[in-house]
Image 1 (spheres, rainbow, N blue to C red):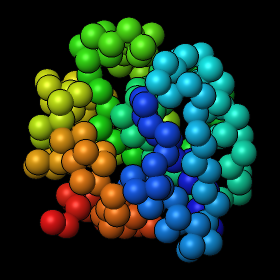
Image 2 (image 1 turned 90 degrees about the horizontal axis):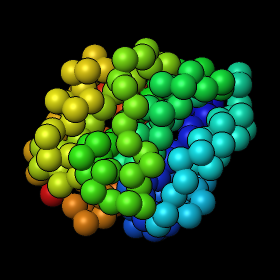
Image 3 (image 1 turned 90 degrees about the vertical axis):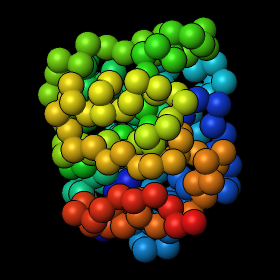
Length: 192
């Protein structure tokens, strides 16, 4: 059994059709422990509150199992804040950061400006992988440039995948399920 923590982004109320909901359901069907919490105030999130929730939910994962975090959008930045602070409890085995927004985008939106990027001069806990669209409107500079290279993490850039959300057509996403079950599996765009 593996213990998964799936974290949503800004303005996300975990819609049933989103790939994260689909992923949580599939992993649960396979008998894994899955935490997919609704984080407080998703429209106007508070960094300190979300960090507290992150710590609480990490603490609820089975410590004897492989522990995997899948963080989309603003929660990918949340994970980076936690790592930059060396927050206790980040001792996970694997992390998938999906479509993190750039600092420039965060600064343009007062609701999430408090999530301004920390300095990326720290070591990430666990084996980390980054996946993003090559045309993500929330990271116009390119996720590899903003995150992949500075953090020295393997990065998958998916053509035409935008923000890897429902607006981009990301409901069921078999490749992310494949990675969850096997970290060597390639992460590809969803089938057309």
